[in-house]
Image (cartoon, rainbow, N blue to C red; front, side, top):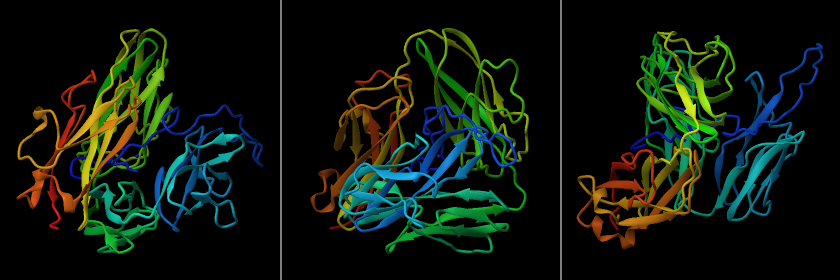
Length: 456
């Protein structure tokens, strides 16, 4: 991506994804079952269906996967166990048939949602778009991979279509590697680091290829995870923590957890399960990531522990710097929203340019209407001018939510701002006119990205 990896754990983890306890998996109050050995099995916390957002060409199909998250934070594939459902089966049907469980088929252009359910527990719905539009391009996240020999990293391929829709196409594309002796690719986007060296990987779908993603495999490299800061936005009865973490080591880290402990009787022991937690799938060397966790607490002072990799799944060069413990006072003013642009990129063919902008509300308060502005070409930050060449109104955004904003521009009728510009410098800004009172008013701008303008 031109500015940042979709924050978004497709991504990725170099990206953080939603976790449990209200952040993505639906928690349930369920008693454990007794297995054949007489032991009580861990309770099921919820069901996560991936990919979380799907675009299907008309007549095409996609394989969905349902993962059950258990109380002990282990997981299991329940794709063949759950009952699959579609809110509008005339647009997209999802199968329960033998050997076809979780396969969704696009029957008519439109939008719907599908879900997985078992024993009264329903997953968060997957947003599905069935489109007859043309595929514009593919983008792989993360845009660069560094891994240690023997490590596996989950990648994501995002597809952009000419009608402005975007979706995770990791299960639909064909993955390729330039040198399988260095790194191999599995269907679905799993990269396996085989031996020390460098190579490139790419994705291809219906004749459209992604850009090459450089891969470096190191024989002996170790990550170093630590918490840089914890920002607490407090309301009368709740707290939103924005956790910034960094991998300061020479190797990447994958598949670990961020745990939040609220008022524990003592410092958490290794392996302890936090009151709230989120998974991280990938953090490259030097990469910074953010996680947001919201929870309710009583008024007064509270001791919070934020711990990275409490399960000790990641072998690090320094194992003693993964804990951060701020004291948070609850009962002040209601936290304000904070709008940022997490991702700003573009796709182009001979007819159109699609700008893809992901707007995130990292505060603890919902926000009403606001504008997102696009400047198609400026050598310096143009946002002080107040109005972009293009702009769109967003009809509100909840705390912790992301809105996907797209500008689709016809090359035949290009704005005057493109004139004389074969390679343009484009900028984006959220809440351009500062209608929204935010906790940080200085993080609303993204850019520039270099845009190669198609010549009609």
